[in-house]
Amino acid sequence: MTVRHHLFQREPQRERIGHEAETKNAMEPFEFIVFNDGYNINTKFNLHAEQASGPGIDTECARLGIEHHRVPWTLFDVESTSDPSWRTYIGLQYALDMFAKPYPGYVVLMDSDMFWSAPFSVKEYLKGHAWAAIPQTRSAGNNTITYVYNGILLFNMMMFPYKAELNFKLDGYDPGGYTRRYLSKHPDAYPRWIPHVMSQTIRTDQEIINLNLSMRFDAFLKKELSLSDGALYSEVIFEGRQLYHYRSGSNWNMKPPSYHKERFRLLSEFLTQYLTDKRYT
Image 1 (cartoon, one colour):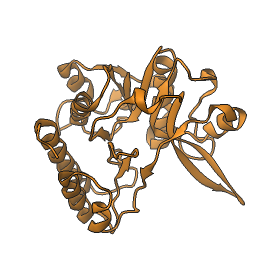
Image 2 (cartoon, one colour; image 1 turned 90 degrees about the horizontal axis):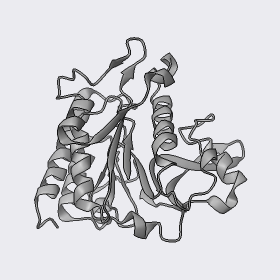
Image 3 (cartoon, helix red, strand yellow; image 1 turned 180 degrees about the vertical axis):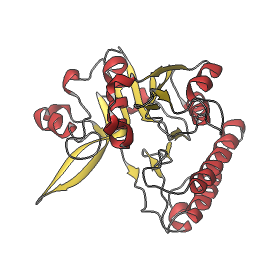
Image 4 (cartoon, one colour; image 1 turned 45 degrees about the vertical axis):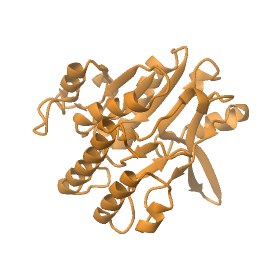
């Protein structure tokens, strides 16, 4: 089961591309589920319902036959509506508690601005592990704390221990900050840590080439780098670079609309070519 969450201010067509990328690259059968957290607490109005850029997320998912759910508006307040970190936590925790934890199999929880760009087997990756995630670190005085990044989570729920205790509250940090308490209490339950090329660490075309990606992926990232402030804002994830993370799809970094419009145009062009070309290399 693949669950995509945190859709606030996202383009509805991203769910179409995300579903198509999953269909092409998943090496096991899967269910694809979307959680829409696009509410304005003051009007209880779905922010995506009348987007000029295209149909709302609910409409787009219904058209494609994708299972989709609204995160109940009663879980939000004014603070959580205006704060992307709180929105992320609420939507993710709802999906985790209501759907992922009870599921008797493999589950992928992923942010909705992540896209598979190469074949991937969740079952093989989790062989011998109950879950996998990216570590997040922050300074705390003279110490460094480690917690679980919320953007991509792989689970074998048949093995995953202490399910009821896993909570992605901020706890003074980002969404997932509270997971440091889970890890501290259960040292036997550490995930397999997923490697990734962090945002803003790639600064030259040669560094992109050194990632050993496909020629088209190289070309796309070079174009994206030319839009950035001296460093690539997106990320590539896993040892084989199978997952692309657009990053800041909700525009928490307050870029002008034209910036995201052009970035998403380049991404859509790249993924569309990849998804429709059987000879892709």
